[in-house]
Length: 338
Image (cartoon, rainbow, N blue to C red; front, side):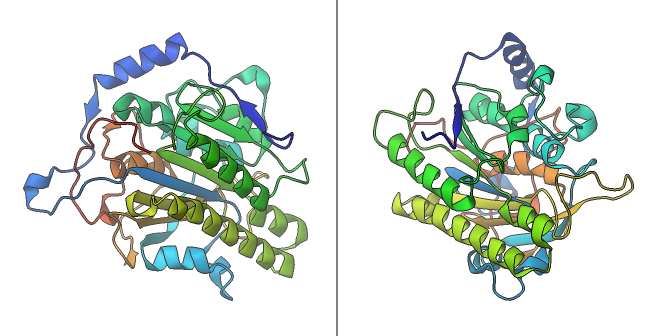
């Protein structure tokens, strides 16, 4: 790993998390109807990719700036009006995506990394993926504030960079993901943690939002940043295609902020964030406009539902059932197949 990324190494699970997850296991509820309701059933996907953008809205697609994302939308399901959280800032919003609860429950209402505050105490989607199915996660964050969420566990690999490092770009993140997959398929694992391809990959791509804030939302630089982000998405999908994984994969895309909104600055207290939320791939309806209310908090439960796993009662995250072609089918125990 080069100096532009700092790896957070896996360590032993803390006693608090073990107790919290142990309690959660006793209160698991099925996330969806079973297949005996007459709806055709299909085996769940095996891999999920979550792209988290910034400064992205429906208007961002104007001018054919994002052909890869446009195809994902055409082939999948979308709402352009998923609700965000308050405050609509980068760190609190990402914390809500990961923990499945609003800001008032996870308590992270600040927007910069503060070592003294520690990691979130609530279990995350990564914890639940491991608890419910032994699934591993790999997370690529592109902002130093998100160190706050990088609690090291044996089943997570976090890699970080930030805007203070000029080499930290969408293209560079893709190169690290390529290196990650090369090592993860080598049989020796990647560093100390995951010994195979992750079941859940999170890729933070904030470049368009940063350029929109610094150079203007109507600038040619912003449009070019959107193209760069789209190329990065395409490159990550190409990595999965090279491993013959796309026929077993589902892709989600959302954004921490809409076009014209700075995820690094506090907004008016009465502003409700509205962001895109997109699903595409195995088991997802094609060309579907989502009608049910969607919150960005629902991402974690929907990821678990996609993988054939169950969600937990203390979450406010709920699966977006409308997007699925098939009734829920519980996944078989993880066999460590990449």
